[in-house]
Structure formats: C-alpha cells, structure tokens
Image 1 (cartoon, rainbow, N blue to C red):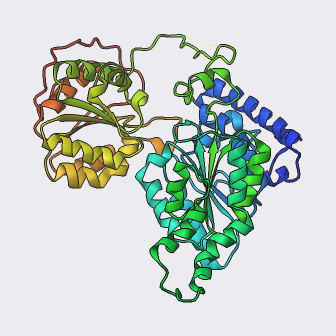
Image 2: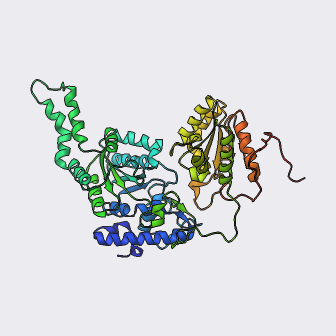
Image 3: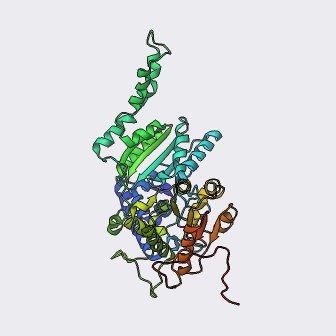
Length: 503
C-alpha cells in the first residue's frame, strides 16, 4: 500500500511489518520534502514514525482516541489521517496547521500547541467514557521534555489514583537521558511482568495472606509490602517512580521496532488500568543531519535536503531581536554577577543560548515549567539577585497567577522579556503573542515596554534591570530594522517620558 492511498488510519490494520516499514519510509520522505520547502518541525515527527504506525495498528480510530502533546510529533499522524495530498500547504494560510487542531480533522481529538497537556486531556476523555458506559481506548503521547511540565505530573498523580480507569500514556523518550539500556532482556522482563499469571499474583497476594490462620485482617507491615515487591519485579529505576504513582510501567521499548511496539501496545490495552509505555526513539530518525544535531533540527526554515543547510535569503537580513537581547544580556552579566538569565526550555529561541555557553553560572533552564520560572525569579529577587526571565509571550500566559500573586502584588524587581510578542505567523493561533499587552497591563506595579528598534531594546533592557519593580519587555519575532547597536554603556530611559518622533 502507498502512503498516498491512506485516507483512514484503520487501513493500517492487517498490514505486514514489511508493508508498515515501507509506509514509514514514505512518511519520512514526504515529511522531509515538505518541511525542507515550507519550514516546520522536523526532528520530532521523524522520530515517532514507527511509534505512530504501531500504535494505530492496535487501535480502532473510528472510536479510540489519541491525544498528542504539543503537536510537534503530529506530522506522521496527519499524513496517515487523510491529509497527505494537502500536506504541501503545511503552516500556510488555510492549509494544514503545524499543530493539532480539532476543526481540521476528526482524528485530531484535542488541539495542542503548548506542552504538557495531553495526559490531562486524555484522562478527562477516559473519565467521560466511563461515565457514559462506553468502551473506547484513550491514549496520550507525551515527549520526555513535556514531562518536565508540572501539569503533566499533576495529571499522572491524578490518573494513578484512578486504578479502575483504563488509560495508556506513551512516553516518547528521544533524549536517552532517563533511559536504561533497551534490549532483549528488558523486553522479556516486561513480558513477564504484564503476563496474566503475575498480574493475578500481584493483585491477589494480600487477599491470600488474609486467609492464613492467626493473621486474618491484621497483616504485618512486612507482608503488606509483598504486593508492591511483586508489582515492581524487574522495573528499572525510572519505572519504579511511575509504579509508585499507580501506573503499570512497560519499557523501555525500542521506538523503531514495529514488531515489539505492536506487541507492547496490545498488551497495554488489555490492562484495564493506567499504563505507562516508555518508548525510546531517535529524534530526527532517518535524516542524518537531524540525528546529528537534534536541537538545531527540532524546527527548521526552508533548507537544502542534500546538504541540510538553510537556504539563505536573497537579501541579507539584520540580526534578530532575540539575538540582540541575548548578546546585550551577556554583556550585562559580565559586568554584574547578580544578573541571572532564566528560561523555560527555550534557550535558543529566546537568545539565552549565548549566555548559557559563556557564563553558565548566571544561566538557569527550569524546563517546561513557566509557573516555576516566575516564582523562582521572585524568590531570587527577594534576596538581592536581578533575574531576567525570557519566555515566549504565548507561554508566559501559563504563569498568569504567578505574575500577579508572586511578583506584581509584592512589587518585586523581576525583569520579563516576552519573546515572540505580537503576531508570529505560520505557527498559528496557539503561538500568537497577541494577549500580553492586555494581560500584563492589568497586573499591579508592572511597567510594560516595547522597543521601536534594536538600540531601544538595549536601553529598555538596562532600564528594566535597574528599575525597582517588575517590568515586561516585549520583543517581536524575526529580524530587527538594521539599526546600529552599542556594545556597552547603555543609558536607561526615563519611564513614562514620551519621545517625539514626528510633529
């Protein structure tokens, strides 16, 4: 079967492994062809091709629901759910969206552009299913990066307390940072752990002990631990954490081995309880340049497929506002050790990568945890540091209460740099930074700034850091105007004083 002939994911049912592998090759080919032309997220989708095919072969997508986290991983999903012919329109007006979008397809069960939402949404669907007395499967696919988000951990904590609510969470681990070795022994031990005999033993061991004469209901503490010990048989360290939270852990599984993936997903669906399937993938799989540089090829503008290099603009563009900010903050940090740059997993996007490289002691990455980043900065400012928190405007929305409660009301001197403020174009409605002016102006004590050019950005940054209260400096995506900037010696602005540009 050809990928172009797929109009419904259920057409994957019954295909042989070799046929699925051929479709996997076609997905990667189409994925690379389109993203190299129009730009978009590259590495995440290339890494989950086999995972997607194997998962969908074990589901009936007329009934079952899959919630993808963020949407970065969603391109293979789109290609096998009837959008192959329209895929050339990716990230264009009225075209295929770069993220998951409910209005685009009945197979996009939940819209997603921000991270860490999938488990909450899928659990909500599972609860609704049970309340209605229905029987469809609910699956959340989340990347290991999104698992750093507090919302994902909150959802795992809740799901683990609902032992009779079937839910499968697929952890796409493409970093190998939390993964023990993947191999035959691991696969065998997982097979043993989820086998019906061992599950029966785990579930019934305490009940059996109660029937022993002279013990009855008063089970000694040592025997109470038997059930947990059996349940955690051969679970690697990371799996033990999920098991303690109430999940049955399966993994790690080779995310590019279709045969093993199908077997594992089928086994997971049979367990009528919360299950976490840990799948290890290679980000950028199948494209050597993306495999070698997983950060650089996470998302790309148009590039040459043969060389992997970006296609240069016909007209050279000035340096971006983000880089001007990053370079300026680096100079400030070199002169003042109290200044600290903070990001929420977006060092390169916000321009803080230059600070990370040159003065790592004055750089903090909290992961996808915007709420924590804001309150962390508030605590630092209480004890004399000068935190500069660089977060995309659209992502700072997630920390609205912390901006009010922890910074604004206390009038703490924290500087926020809102990257991608305003319209950002191709990324769509989940990423537009169009709300920050309204939501920041409503918070007590905040001073909101927006520079007219690169030079004013520098002056506003030094103004923010020197101001004895909270500030928010919003900067747009993309290139500046080509205005000359200074290396140091920036003069702060007088807050509230207008500059007459034209009479």
